[in-house]
Length: 193
Ligand SMILES: [Zn+2]
Image 1 (cartoon, protein in one colour):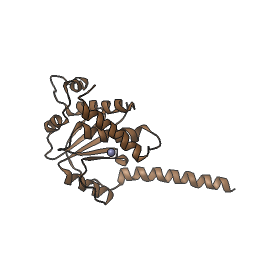
Image 2: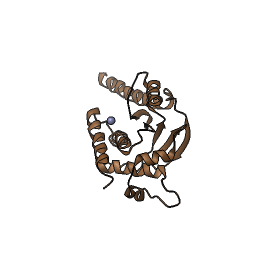
Image 3: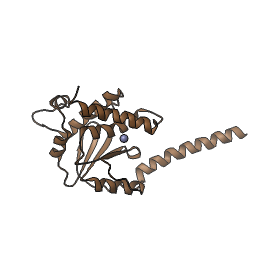
């Protein structure tokens, strides 16, 4: 009699946890971000806050010509931000040797660190200052500022997205930081293999 009871409670708890996480994503606190422009790419829905300039983002990514060729840049659409971010994502997956072919996530670009801190405050009710960017697993969303829209910073946060979506059971936080830090290091040291 006792055992099935325990099993039942356990299953109920698992279902509750999954439901709570889904509910948080669906009807949780709003991040307060209102996009002025949306760009769809293969892997991302990219949302830019008002005043964020797409060409500025492309130049601050600072990807070399090889990446642009790999991103499938054509003469008719040079510097396509979506293609470049897809190429960056594939690069990050390659560094970790974790391929996520059917991944879809969101990238939201804020004006500055204050706007980013405001988003974090709305979501978690606590301060998180001097962050260049962060990835929120429950929303599968990567937040970054216009001024820190650099390949190594995006690569680091994409690393968190890749790790979170690759493993069924989430990897410990320290392991995630080491792996994300490794992508950052690889992207910082060379233009592209
Ligand atoms: Zn990190």
